[in-house]
Length: 523
Image 1: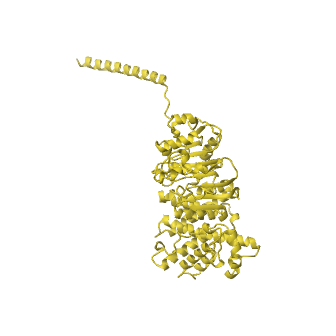
Image 2: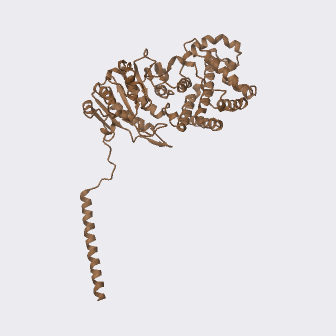
Image 3: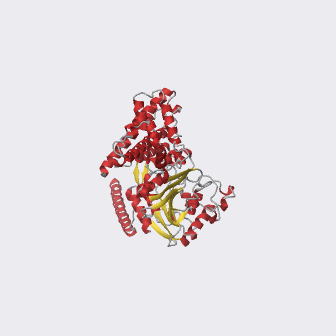
């Protein structure tokens, strides 16, 4: 399929999503309503995904959606083992939607959906996929007053939502699409809502252009990896960008992440399913990574990508166990309790494999702040773990206009230096946001990979020089800004001034002569 056709599919998809949001948000705030749009989109996806899987398995002429529930029960156990969940034919999205449009559920659509969601999650109980399915519909409250003050109003809203999601042209077969339709729909929804929701949206959604840059850097030219990890995975956009870059099949063991926010944790797992990542290929945990990391048995990781929360509080020295934690203890000092940035950095370094790469978005203060953070930076530089520091443009992220940076860590470096890249001017302006274009991304990535020095853009600095400069890692301390002021030729300017002064003197003399003549005539 050509790029033009794919672009047209994507444009139509986005137009439909916007129409859904515009028609249905009404009494429900847009940011809250995303849970219903995404939840219904997810319900449709897993229904169609399962149906296609079973139809392909049974062969031509078989239609799982037309099967009686009692006949379908025969394959429940094997289906759950392979797909991670099971849906009765009567509870498939298409069949519930058809009955709703036939007005069979005007009074009880909320109950029908609630039962279907409960049964889908319950189908995984006691199996390997239980943790991956549990609570996925928790934020889809079919009885919420936000949908209407009466059951009738709520069912009317649910019916409209279901019909509009069902009318979206996502292809009759997933592989027939020129785009990753469900995944693209998810990303468009998150971008749309995050841009309108400020911090509440931006804090867990990393824009795709930033994700692409981080992923390319962390892949370090590889076409396959064993595992990819994000300790603050939000809705999973960074993890899944790896699948977009090299194909999910080339992430051999799978995608690992941890998220502290329950709603966001659910969104991340939904995102995995919507991008057709099966339950056995991802392990997303709920919890505080700094306090209770979930993947001790899975580290080290050769690829780590992350956009941790900026300068949040953590226990730090207030918990005496932290200084002996093998993740934090090597630096001999803990990140301050008021700023956890470098605690996350130390955690990722600890879990990075000897041949791995970690690409981390950081708050700019970590590059130059003193105290404990300066000591941690000294540990990182002295041990030659800092590979590259990249200054990003301002206003790239939803909810904040600050100019963030990227720190690239490696455990095995040949040279004892750090590459500094000033990419603060590498952006295109789109709406009220700055974006990284493909050209911007390629320029930054290629400079990083080649470790090239480019005047006014990049500079290699020895570790010793950095330590001698108070371990300051600010890009502006090493990459000289281009002087864009108009250059002035002093000799030429002085000659011009002399001409002006001479001309001025000449005019004065003429004026004096005229005045003298006038005064003589007056006498």
